[in-house]
Image (cartoon, rainbow, N blue to C red; front, side, top):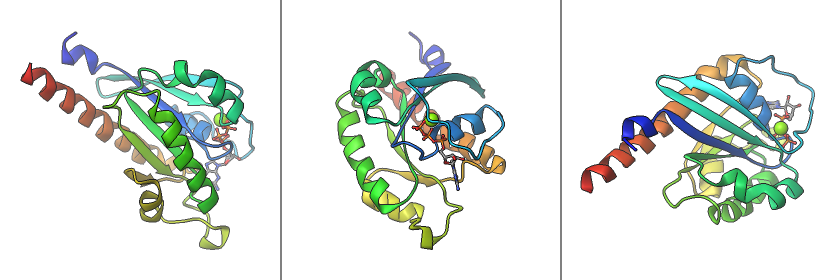
Length: 178
Ligand SMILES: Nc1nc2c(ncn2[C@@H]2O[C@H](COP(=O)(O)OP(=O)(O)OP(=O)(O)O)[C@@H](O)[C@H]2O)c(=O)[nH]1
Ligand SMILES: [Mg+2]
């Protein structure tokens, strides 16, 4: 397949503990109304988003550990970018490290794993850490986000654009080597 064709359809996957904001991120991307109420995702949710010349299939996986154990292989397989979403609290970030270790068994070697330090609107008194601190603890590139704020849609789209562009560039340079 040509790299130009590969670039069109991308699989982006969200994983993370329950209630960290994965579905809210999906709603932010697809311009759905953002709810402050929490409705846990059962199984997974799937939406296609158009961004530049990408058709991005975003897989939003319910955070309950039973889902992950049962479906992780099918769910993670073939991801072009994996986002590990946290609520930026120390406990959740430490749990996310385990999740990253687990996920690496199911994704390709060259699939980037990107951290999201969500709920940046919360205060330090809530235990909210800065994106830099979350990045240090996760040992993966991490971006801060407030997914309940509709104004952050552009920010999330830019993060996705940047990461997908890098994936495509890496693939192109690999193709050139062949
Ligand atoms: N304060 C704050 N709350 C947020 C933010 N993002 C999401 N939430 C809230 O967190 C709760 C859980 O959000 P969801 O997006 O449903 O979480 P989830 O990760 O999809 O949860 P599961 O489907 O159970 O895995 C909801 O009440 C959201 O309104 C944020 O940036 N800041
Ligand atoms: Mg959800």
